[in-house]
Length: 88
Image 1 (cartoon, rainbow, N blue to C red):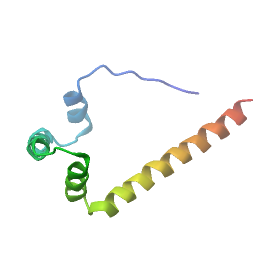
Image 2 (image 1 turned 90 degrees about the horizontal axis):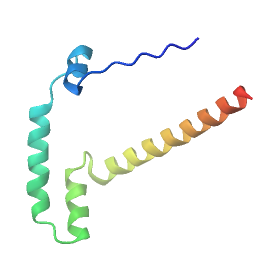
Image 3 (image 1 turned 135 degrees about the horizontal axis):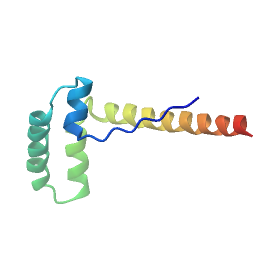
Image 4 (image 1 turned 180 degrees about the vertical axis):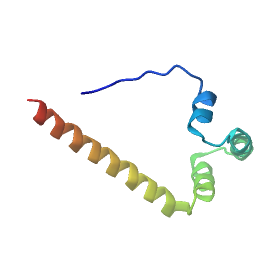
């Protein structure tokens, strides 16, 4: 049996309902910092260097995140493929 529930609320209402912290001030600071950093970028090499410096753990962090996303996508594809076989 499957039950589907649809809740119509704003992101702020959902965050409050789930007990998540309000990170809007931190997000504003982050966006302002990124905007200031991007103002001086005139070519892709500069952009790549800024991304490396701002990313957690630098290049290694980016690679770990990339591996995580690729692994998740592969697992999702395997999961979807096996459920289709079960439905047949």
